[in-house]
Length: 462
Ligand code: AMP
Ligand code: ZN
Image (cartoon, rainbow, N blue to C red):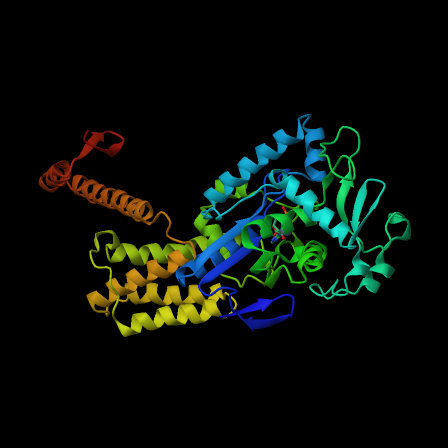
């Protein structure tokens, strides 16, 4: 398998630290509001990474944090006139609900920053002891000049930041690139006791503690959106390097943005739609399809036309599966070499830096094969089994049974309406014998016809 490593800016062979095991960390949300559909892209992509490794037979340990202490949460608490714990809890719960609605499998561990406060303080203390951090009047900063590797992930030079930084920004820091590890609290803010007085941790430290706690000091893949490369991931990695001499992760994966009218969808630009609102309009599976039909590193434009196209495309899978009566299939084994080759193609696509767009194209080939009347019956069944097997790797078909049943129900309704149309024609022609026969035959199936001067309606017999 090859995956694009942001650190080296190239596709590299993936070699796990321990054979057969994947240790994956992806940055989760800061819970001060409902998350938007751009954030959902990141959550869905890493859900697919996790699912694909599981399909390959890896034992996956997937950690996603919840940042439940942050300036933005404090601001939101003030604006909602509520305690900051309440705000964090409210939006953390909403986050979990929305992820479930999106069909995202719960990560193996989902720690919250406020639950690991002693470990956070201990980590900062160690950095101070080792000479990689310094305290100024209750604030603690990471000393970037103490780490020659600083900038190695993002490719930024400390000097670049010197020129870019506003001199007056913070006169306490030794260097403009130095970042906050511990922040002295202002009156009225939530506080934790520390060797440097009352305060709270910086975001970059929280992720180091939560990832290392579950995955060890160095793990396989660290992920997030491309906006996190600098400063967040650079600063996470710097702390790990300073602590252990090892990078926090071997591979750094970053998804591209969901844009809206050419701009990144973001809370600060106020150009966002919450995942919650979008899920009122569209099925979660359609949203997943919309994201996975593009490579995860490419930017995607949010347009309703594209989402609606995704809905239509996805319907092809269900039409194909309905045409073989998938729900009644007894067999489970797939032996035909042509179909097994499709699985190989799927793996090749996913092994090439998670090319889900190519993988989906292969699912369409299977759907066409199923609907191609010339195919032998058994081939269609095997193709249907493979379509479902591979679709599930991408997180599709989570409600297959009910979706197919719904499709059948819709079809049945359409058929009844069709028969009522024929009966209307028969009555217009005064063909009472045919009209009665159609009514009686439907009644035998439990469908009652009610005739009235305005026309005929039907209902199911109780
Ligand atoms: P945040 O709550 O802002 O820290 O974001 C949570 C995750 O969503 C991070 O991995 C971000 O990089 C990612 N993200 C934020 N905005 C977008 C966007 N417009 N498109 C794709 N990913 C995003
Ligand atoms: Zn993080």
